[in-house]
Length: 420
Image (spheres, rainbow, N blue to C red):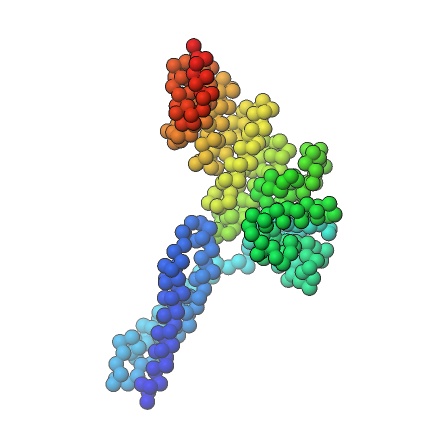
């Protein structure tokens, strides 16, 4: 009779072990994730189910075995002490890990959501290009805490003024058929709707590119961007934009490096957004400082490097146009370091050195860049021009010839023909 009573416990144990294997190792093998920083950080939530199976199975190890007629090496009475010690050890390990995993005093996302609300004036519309931190922190404050009823509430989703442009998390403002609209038509439908809305209300966005909304322009205002429907007035508004940074809570930005990827991905956005503001105001030193800090704070964030390179590169070109080569050089170096696989930023460094009449440094730069990007045609065109200025005609011909071989641009033959 005792043997019959123990069998259900064994069945439960086997079921829990199977649950652990299927929801843990088997699930990972089936999904075959890439294990980049973003994916690895997102996997934590999937550990809960297999860990729960182990936690539920642990007490079953203390169940007494049946009489000797049903021997069991795993459940024998003589091993109860060992099994009990194992359960105690698991409990101690969980208690030791708790302070590390606790989020009780972590205010990074909480402050971020509050800062976003501080950025938005009364009755404004706010459109998010993406980002879980933005979407869910605002959802918490609007729907759970009931803050900013002028932006919407859980009881009136139709009047909600906070929306995501993809229509994934918040109810779509573009119509119920938006998600079923073909992709090529979806963008046009969204742009038409937002353009019409911009004539009636103040609109703010959160994107990583200030040229995301066309033909309208976006003006950086703290952590968000203000939409201006008349691009011709963008620069006129530069001096009237509010400075919101003194009103933000920045208590979570300092301190040691963050262990969790989501935090490493969110934290540098503060510095990136402030760098965008400095870039818009044509303050290259301040912009360069913030872009560098952003990469230092979250260098493995997948969104960060390409966008830092884009912003630093754009400002670098402005500095070239304004004949400020020293500042352009620093910005192109920031861009090249941020996006090391993009040859144009490295070539721009060489070009600026040429403009500064540092021919030896410029040619050394070209040589170093050529070892990495030997098939990048623009390199040889610019290198040829520098060689001419340096008085090295034969090498210039070779460089222009290489450019022609890569592009078949007949203009290169004309350049070669004019070299004496």
